[in-house]
Length: 96
Figure (cartoon, rainbow, N blue to C red):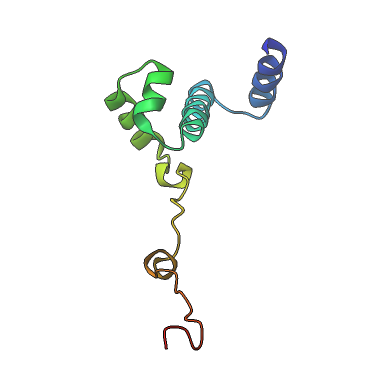
């Protein structure tokens, strides 16, 4: 892990990225990754990051992270399928 981080820092340095820009990008990427792991759930992500949820929400706003994009959409059956009861076919000539 230290080798990968060292390589990344060297690339950023050679690319002209300033210290504060690198720190900001690291924080944003780290927080986004944890939020993605928890499907955008900010309370669970804050616990994982060991920070208060309000602090996380402030950082999300500061870094302009789109939490809605990290959430998985709910999958529900179409309304038509879930409300129509199964029909029983009458046998012809039955009950006469």
